[in-house]
Length: 392
Length: 225
Image 1 (cartoon, chains in turn red, blue):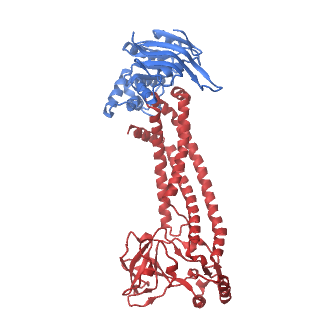
Image 2 (cartoon, one colour):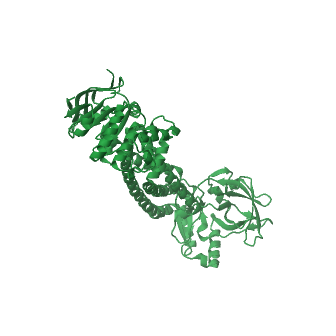
Image 3 (cartoon, one colour):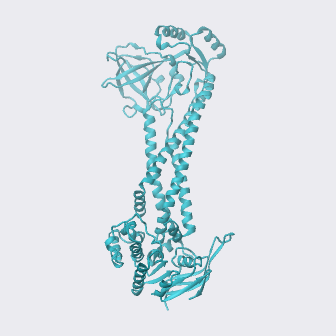
C-alpha cells in the first residue's frame, strides 16, 4: 500500500511528463495494433480464400457498364446471366424493424448457394436445414445482433418504406465473429476486402415470403452476382461464357482473384502496415527515451528512499507500479477506442483483437523495464550518496 | 567496552577484476563506541565517503567484517541492511538530500513510511523531530522555498525522526556559510550530548574541533586515529 501511495505521489508530482508518456503509449498501441490488424486481415482473407469451397468457382464481374445508371440494360443482362447454367446470386433488400425506424439489410441467397457458403455459426443451424413454415422465414443474424435476439426468436419487419409488406422471420442461427458477406463490386477493380467485406448489419436468408405468402424480390446489385460451380472443364466454360456475355461483363477465376489480391491488396495493406510499424518504432523509441529521462530524474528520489531504509526491491516496485499505471491506463483506453471505432465503422479494414493488444503492451512494458533497469543499475553502481550529489 | 560499530580489516574494491579496478579502502579497522562524536578526515578521493557508505550499510565491503550492535552484517542481504539503515542509522548530507518539490513534512516522514510506523503516528513524530531542530513552523512549506540552513535542519530532523542510534553526516556544513555551519554543528553536538553517536566525514578543521575523536584517512587506509 505504501508503495502504491508513493507511486501515485510520484505521478502527481510529474504529471506533465507522464501525460506525454501516456500520449506516446496511446499512439504506440494505436499504431502497432493497426499494423498487426492489417497483417491479420491479410492472412485472414488469404486463409479464407485458400480454405474456401469456392476454389473451383468462376466469378462474373460486370466491368463494362455502369448499371446503376441504366437499370433496363442491367435487367437485360442479368436475365441473360441467370440463364447461364449454375449461376447463383444474392438479392439484397433493405428492411425496417416493426417497432422502430431502424433498418437492416437482408441478403437473400439463391437456392443452393447457401449449401456452398456455410459461414461459421456461434449457435443454431445453417439455413439449408430449415424451411419456410407458415410464411415464417428462417434467417441467420449477425453476431452484432446476438445481444438482442437468440435462436428461436421471432423478428417482424417490413420490406418497404411504407411498411405495407410485412415479413415474419425466425432466428435459426447466429454468425460467429467476424461476420462476412460474399459480395463483389462493379468495375473490374476486384477487391477482396469487398468480396469478403465485414458486415455487421446484415441478415442472411434464403428466399423470403411475406405474410400473404408472396415471394419478395430484392435487388441483385451488379457486384453481388456470384457463380459457384464445380466445373469439370472450367477453361472451356469460361470461354463459352465469355463469348455469350461478350461485352457485358468479364469473367474471373478464383486464381485471378487471388492474383489481383496479391498485387493490389497486399501492396496496399503492406504499405499501410509498414507505415504504422515505423510509426510504432519511432513512438516506442521516443517512449523509451522519455522513460529513461523520467527515470533519471527520479534516480535521486530513489537514492533518498534507499538511504532512509528502502530496499532495492522496494525502489524497483515503486518504479514498476508507476510504470504500470502510466502504461496500462492509456493502453487500455487506446485499445478500447480502436475497438469501438472499428466496430462502429462496419467496413473497417482492420481486425483488432486482444492478442495484438497483449503483444503491444508486452513490447511497451519491455521498453519501460529496460529503461528502468538502466537507471536502477546506475543507482546500484554509484551508490545513493554519489547519486544525490550528482543529480542535485 | 561496548562498540556500536566495529569495522575489522575492511576493504572495498570497485570494479574488481577489471582494468579500472579501484582500491577505495585497504584493510581498515575502526571501532566506534556508543555516544562517540567522530570526524573522518581526508582529501578528496581518500576513501572517507566509501568508509561512511559501508559503515552506514549503504554499500557492502569486499572483504573484512562490519559488526553493528554485536551482529556481523557484512554478508547480510539487501532487505536486512535496509532494516538496519531504517532503524539504526540517520543520514545528513552536504547537499541535504531532500526532495525539493515536496513539503518539509513529506521529507521528514520518509524513514517512517519505510518503517513500520502507523500512518496516524507519522505526523506527530515528524512534528516532534522538526520542533527539536527548530523548524516546525515550516512543516507545510515546500523544501525549495527554504534557505540552506533551514534545509539542513530539515535533513537533521529526517535523520533523527526514527530515533536511530547513529547519525552519519557527509560534509554537513559544506554548503553552508560559517555562521549557519556553526549553528548546525552546535545542533549535532547537542544530539551527541543526548546520547546519539555521530560520525562526520569532513575536511574542515572547524568540524573536527567539535568532535571528540578524529580519524584521518589517506589512500584508503587510516593514518591517524
